[in-house]
Image (tube, rainbow, N blue to C red):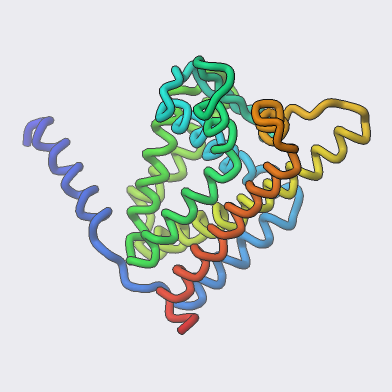
Length: 251
């Protein structure tokens, strides 16, 4: 077999995995994934580690919308405190800049909603491959060492799951990641408002996405926080309903 044939065979196998629906998992898998995610969200140490995954998607959403609105992307940086920065060049004001600034916090929720839709149709492996594609695209834009480390670790985990894990582990991981995106997104918005309140008490001017949007639009930052929470909450409810109905837990 030539190298070209080998690559073609590999792509064919990947495509087969992505497009072949898996049977609905046991109730224990769906509920167990929820419990694991809730524990991660509740335990500060675990949340700090897992929060990096949300930051990757958050910055990817900024980058995607920046490109779609005609801005020129210059790179993404990820930091050890779970913050991130996406730099793009274009008009400093206007709808494109507003859309780019708004995209970050709803980004994980929207991705989670898409993943929930795939799960509801049995494409658990497809969810993992979609996440791997997101990581590869982010990797191309990373501009600092810590960010490179975060993305590579996530990529290695996803490659291991898609290449060597058993179907049961793949399905369980897909459900856990999807629940984390859906439930972690509103958790991050609540954390945002807590951080903003803390900064105000210290007499510091906020520099969050909500504060940037307030400066761009003159709409109060708290309103933008509320919009973030609304989008994330709707996505969590809708995505959760898709998952539990597909699993037969809700008629």
